[in-house]
Each structure stands twice: as C-alpha cells, then as structure tokens.
Image (cartoon, rainbow, N blue to C red; front, side):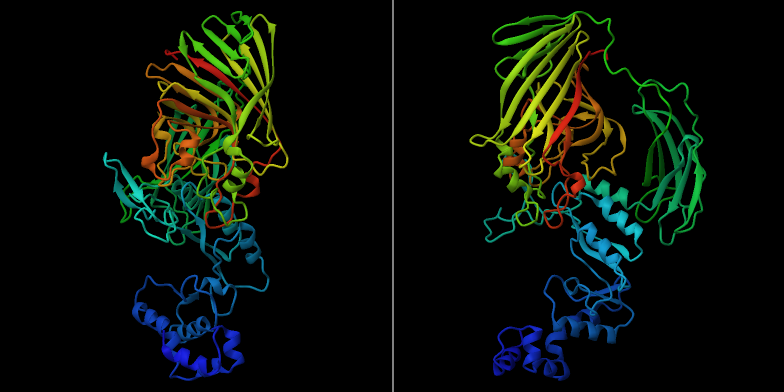
Length: 632
C-alpha cells in the first residue's frame, strides 16, 4: 500500500511485482538493503512478532496464509529468525524453500507425504497445514494419513479444516431451525456453503466424522498378541503422561449382549512405552453358540476429574473379534418346511405359504406384494440402487474426480430399470425359484447395467435374493451397488448388528465399533446443513425394521452389507439446499447395499482413494429377507 513502491517501480518500468523483475532491474537489492525501505514490506511480520512474542502458546511463526511466495516472504523469515531464534518459521506456499523450518503441504495425497518423508536430502519436519476438509459428510481415509504419520518420524500430523460449521442460525415462519450460508442473504458474489466445513455443527453437535478423528488420534493403542488367551499389547501414545491416570475396563459381548465383564489394574506405562496385559475372560469353547461372534472391548477412561473432562470420560477403546471356534449357523431353513403353493397368471406370479404371500409383477419383475400374517412388509422393490445424494466431496467441480458431475453425465440420477425376462420354477414342494433379468439405463442412452435377480422362496417365509450387477466398463466409478426397498411407515424401529451407533462408510468406520444398535428411522438422519447422503451403516450382519409391536422385516447379509433407512428419498436429499426444504415422507426408503463409494476429501483436497472406489464391472452378492413375528 505504500505509494513509494509504485513510484520506485515506475522509474524502472516495472509493473509486475515478482522477484525476477525486481532482481533484473536492480530494485531488489535497493529494497532489501536500504533501511528506509525495510518497514514497507516487513511491517506485518514485525508487528505480529512484537505483539505475540511473550505468549507461551505461540510455538511457530507463520508468514501468512495462501498469499503466494516471493522475496517479501524470504525477507520476513530473515527478520523473524534474527529477532526471535527460539521459534520455528512456517509458510505453506514456500514448499521446501530454505525460508521455512517446517514443511507444510496443503491437502496432500497420502502418497505425497510418504514421498516427502522418504526424501533423503530433507531433515525438516512435515506438518500438513490442512489435510482433511470436513465439509458435510466427509473426512474420509484418516486412517491412511495416520498410518503414514505413525510410520515416519518426520511426519508430525496436520490440521483438519475446519473446527465448526460457520452457519448462521435462522428459523422458518413455522419455527423450524436451519442454518444459512453464502447467498442466503442476497449477497453476491458468495461461496455458498463452502464455510460449512466443520467437525462439529454450527450448534456444536459433533459430526460423525468427529468420532473417527477421536478414534484414530486416541492416546492409547491396543494390539493383539494372543487373543485366545486375552493377551494384548498396550502402547502409550502420550508425549508426556504415563497411563496411571486411566482406568481400564473390559467386556465380552455376543450379538450385542454383554456376557462377561471386568476391570484391570491401572498401568504406569511411561510416555512412548508399551506393556502387555492379559484380559481374564473365560474361553467359551466348546460352548460357543452356532454362528455367533464374540467381541472383546477394552476401554480406557479418566480415573479422576481433569480441567477438560470429568472422571469416566472415555479417551480410548479397542475391539477385537475373539477366535472362538463357534459352529457355523445353517445357511438355509430346514427341509421340513411347510409346502408352497405356486399360481401363475398373465400378470402375476403368486407364491403362498403357511403364513405369508409373495407376489411378483410380470411387467416389472419386482415384488408387488409381500404379506406376513396379513400384514404388508413392503410397498416397492427390491430394485437396483446406484444413485446417492452427492456429498459435498462428490459435488466438487475442480478436483480430479468430479464425481457428481460424471455421475450425472452418464445418467446415474435418472436410471430406468426395464424387464428383459422372468422365469419361475418350483424345485421342491417347499422351494420356488424366480429368476428376473433386467437392464437399467438412463433415457436415450445405451450404456447401463445388466442385472439378474434370483429369488429363492422357502416355505418358512425366507426369501434369499442373489443379485448380479454388470456395469458397463465405460462408466465412471459408481456411487453405490445395492437394492432399494420402500417399506410402510409403520416399520419405524430400526435395529442393526454392525458398526454404529453413528453413520459410517468404507473409508470412515474406524470410530464405529461393531454391536447391536437400535433407534427410530428418523434417528438415522444426520442434518448436514446442505442435505446430502447420510446415515449409512457398514459391516452389517443383519438389520430389522419393525413396528411398535415388534413385527416387520429382517434382512440378513451374506456375508456383510451397507444399510440405511430414511423418511426421505435420494432425490429428496439431492434437490434440497437447506434442511428445512426436506419434507418427511411417511414411507421408508430402505437401502440395502453390497457396497458404497468412500467419502474422501475432494471438496478441498484429494478424492476417494482407489481402494474405496467402486469401479464398473461385475458385482454379485446375496441377502435374505425374513418376516419377523411380533413375539420375536
């Protein structure tokens, strides 16, 4: 802002203030060596250091943020080092220039920080100045970043952007709360919801991603040594404290029910040290129940009140599947099932059992009715499910993946599934098999998905669906691969055996332990300020949707599933720009997925890692539908 800059540069015909121009005209030497000019470009750095030099919380001086790099920054660094040699100097756009003492990449790929850590010519620490953009449903693949940090001494962590959604609380005329962002006040230009990027909501409710962050950065690590005997290795990841301030408790659970529990003596393991512990559970062999998994959980909680949390606050946990040799559960219902009655007409295939009726529509190949003891279990489906309401990361327009743009280009948001063939065969008096072939594609486009559904209907009321999906090889990575089922709104109780209790995704599930969880369908919705895909549960063994009496539908993964249930459809979530624009439906959209694409960090950083992408190709999986009696 000093007008002398312009006067001086005008004398030399310089109109681009970069180092090359300044040096070539001899101006740089004059500016850096003439005391008269020193304050003109050092003033900001001098004022910062003089103002904050006595604050012990300041451990690093920054030359600014995202403001280019040139000789002014080098001069600032020289002045700071000369006047305060006790602190480090950091600045992101400087890359690996000698100006800085800390290398601070911004939104690097995991492969990039590993490359930096392995540079034989570097000794400076690497601290990612920003690396996980928590905008909406995001913060994927933290595990991979921290695996690298743990492996390489020079990698010392990083800063998640941001702490809190910067939304402004508003209310509709009906009193419904919502949070405003750029453009909601008639402001132009604006960045829309780009400041809605926190680990916690604007009202300070933790996002599901916060639980992932807490788990991965927890100060105690537990690893198995000999699980069958309860032997574990505990590593203290604190930098200064020993572990004497933590209580240790353990449980063994089966299908969500705790069957053994106890406490262990406190440890005095020093910072950075390790110790071996033995959990004294009782081995269940040979009494292990058929098909049951047994889970050991060890929890570390504060033994006393602290300045930041009260006694009993959990700071770390670990979960392990115990290697008990439980007999396998039977895959199919017994052979002494009731017989089935098969009736075919031009419009329908009707299969009737002792307490249920199943009807297939010959025009669509879908189930049009599934009734159990006179109660309708579903209203539509199952049908192919590919689209998801784009997350903020999916909707990124400048990254290398640009997921939502590519998904819309190929019509994933407007697929139509058409029947190709339907066949039915009663292979035993108690078993009927229905095979359905379909092709799903967007109108006016030839590429799409060849699908084959094989329904095996048993006299017990069980329906096993084998779903084969063949995606055209020219398609981009898929949002999801699965089935969509519409259920009556009465089945509002949602219970699952998988990861929880909060939502989880393929690249963000470390912070969700396996267990049995229950809540209403409405509880599964997370109100991201910009509505988007949410509420998914990973590694699900089984899930039930039941009414107030406990009757409804159970779905069993063969082996594991991703599931979610909402009173909104994917198009509802796609089209809404604010939470108040979502209108609750009475019906329930139940997503039963083989897999769903990861989340990544593409709203301002790397996209989804290859390991969590669903590449086009062939997918085959099975699920079992089971009617649930009220008394069960």
